[in-house]
Image (cartoon, rainbow, N blue to C red; front, side, top):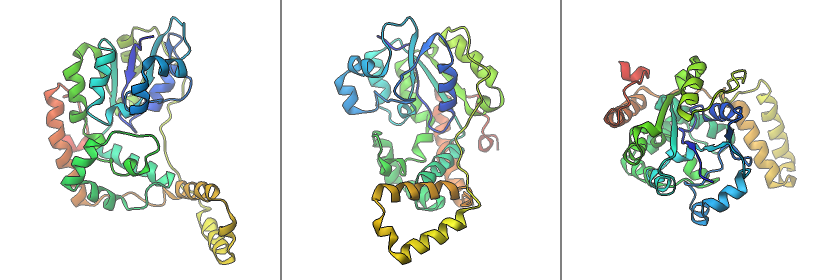
Length: 297
């Protein structure tokens, strides 16, 4: 079966909410395995072919419109060529968030998961090194690659670079670009836009709009005391590694909000310079309707 549409990202820009809206339509069929279930961005799945992937992730023989939400499809410039090769008539949906806010959100997510140990300024400064930016842009996404997740904060917000090959391979009528701010402030407008674009009748507008967040706990001090006791008693050595890892991630998630994310003025200006250059590419492909604060200044 041929997919009717793909939502390609961007990561941390409301794709989970879009997934819930799309899933609420009686005319749309999404993978039953997971929200993302990437295909085009993973070499092993891609080489095995679409037919095998479809059989493993979709319910066959329905009259619905097949589609999927995979923010990994805005990770690398090679992916739209793969999509074009198999499905030249497919519809593409992208949702974009202020790239600086998006990068901060990804950092906070990795901090909460226990993947990230650096300060946000240290993480961004390291990725801003020209050689590292080039390397990060060349990396293909792989499942559960913690190293990749903590070294691609900035390049995943270069929407002009990432969307340019989509606009080069697909007609503009096949691409719908939405914005995160509209999803938060005008969700009905977003639903109407998607409904018209996909030619489906309606979505469940009663779905609660949910955006991933990480919160701290007033009990973090208790965890600190318990951890010290465990270390002194040697109890830590008796705990299986997987439990230790889960405990570490849980603690990191709880303390994320306490670790305030403050970007230095110097790094903020470097990010504005980076994304201003990319915004030039966005304008070339016709994306002018951007209201991000740093662009308006």
